[in-house]
Length: 245
Image 1 (cartoon, rainbow, N blue to C red):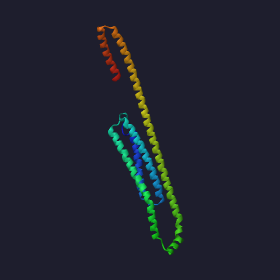
Image 2 (image 1 turned 135 degrees about the vertical axis):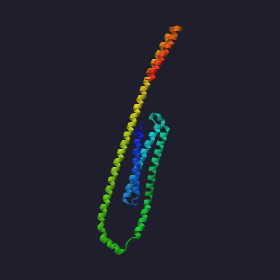
Image 3 (image 1 turned 60 degrees about the vertical axis):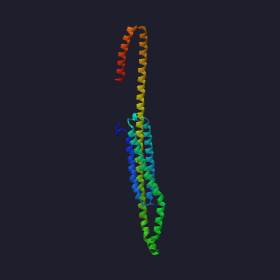
Image 4 (image 1 turned 180 degrees about the vertical axis):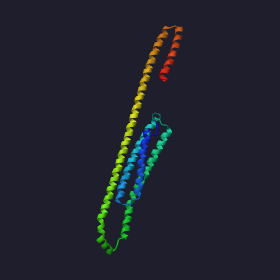
């Protein structure tokens, strides 16, 4: 089976695309200021995507384990199995690194917020400047709220699009699983038909052997030699019909 037709490589490509998008989102997340609402949503999104990809890798490893029980049935060898195991291990490491980085950044967010509060208190203006802010600063509140609302709506829209892509990926993986199941059922049917043909051939050979035994008992030495020659020719004919056609 070629790489283009092998379900493993189809699923592998889907998972690799998900990992690439995950790493791209992680790099964007690293540039977001700690404590911002965008970072909270991005953190939840990253952790959810990590869990989804880990589940897909688990399912792929289960398929590799099944194939390892009878590699010849699936047209692969030990070297190919080792390459597939190595790729799933590498994929799991990439996801684990992103997840560890997100959790570490999430744990440090509290300490970072406290430092920002202390710096803000040190920069607090005097009473005259505070009064001036009370007079003019409030004018920008509505604009800030509107900008923050637009940013939140954009983030929600992006999350919805990524969830739709994830749903499509899961559907494609499910379709690949059904294809694998159909192939296994077809192969099992072929094996059953072959077994039936072998049983039929064995029954015919048993019948011929019984008939030959009865004839040889009735025939003399000359007749037995002729019978042996006849059986030899018959065996050759049956061998050609069964194994060479």
